[in-house]
Length: 293
Length: 293
Image (tube, rainbow over all chains, first blue to last red; front, side, top):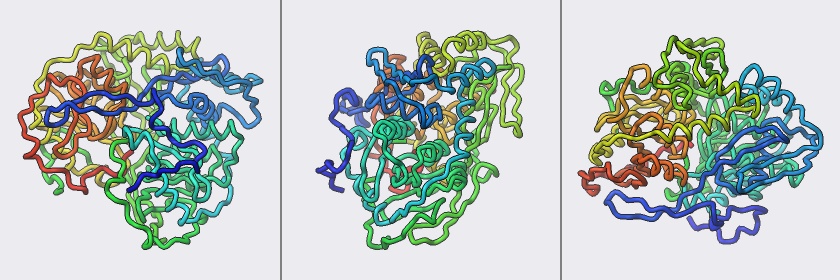
């Protein structure tokens, strides 16, 4: 499958040659021969909301500001009416501080709950499920012809994955055009970076489609719904709870999209099946994403 | 590739027919035809250490006691001299409480640190890196002939993966024999269940090999080292930091093991290259794990 040469249609495309995202190490193959391999970086980034330390994420390290903003947004810690006063990345300290004009009520919540529970993970999770209750996803016609073009274009786009493997990609798309392609060691980070970019650039979600290389788990579905995006597409499989939540919030969920094949698991009503699958060529073996799991 | 019929060599093999781990849902394929698909479950499990709520994990739901024990052990929250007084699983409340004879010092630490930092994730992470400083992994001869047999046997073992996809597997092995094969939606949970089983059954780690279908990230390497297992093998790729930690603690790290191919990234000195790769048949296409990412 020929790699895409011109990526100028993207607003942000992966930059596999960017330094500090990969480096070469020497291993030994099955014959004992030394072999040079490009591997992706993975470094800690601690995210603060004002004076509150929230989480330390493991990330490849690009777009730390988008990652921090998107993480806080997708966790329901930033609200639509929150004014972002500053986003400060300190490369040496490996921290990002997101400052809001007023103290967020999340800080109060966290302080209160941690007194009794010690760790916020369960709490955060509960808050997210609460946040989903008000979610109503917009109507959008999703053409299957667009989906086929998107999958083909994305798979041929030069990326850290094609360079080094062991990484996930998430792509924000509109119609048949991929707009922003983010990658990270964790699929959740890649989605959060997209959410952060959308927040920064004030991009509306209602005519967008999110494409991911990762599995459709509950967290992926929740994040997509929290972002207000009505359709989520993946090459990979899905979990029962991911599907259940998608059905509950009426998100169009499409999995196992490879070559001409896909399966729609929720929100079928948005699909316009305008393409004849038989006219779509099956995916060549070389296109299968082998290393990112 | 023929499925393994006799799994009696395993101490614990996957039980793909066990109820509550998968269920059937109906989706629509690329032609709009209704299609029945088995999907894995994903449910929350909240883990307590004595009176302290620690984390809510998303899990398929089997072996909750092992998951809780292994998680706490691998996070450095249970020490070698801790007496486990009880492990109480409440299916309805979706909780596991691990009770120790004496109050663990971790509870104090957590209480102290949460007062200033609000959330324990960063703290926990710091504690793990501290915990690694004392780790010295045992010598063991790892025969490549054993590795080839292990990979072949594991890939042919009936599993939730082969049934439903979108799931990770981790297998505790000794020589050419896979002993305990755990699966979960998160690869970390699968490893934690193995750690919990080892703790419960008082199984020594020094002659064991850990095989995983997931990527070799820093967390996978750290968990394996915390468990005292000297060799970690994966079908998938790896991250730079995963390799760096493996080199630091002298863990034998093998990635991209498919058919006759593999690459050794650290701890080469434990390898006995007794098999000729040319005599090993390449992996048929059907064996590639497509859906779990």
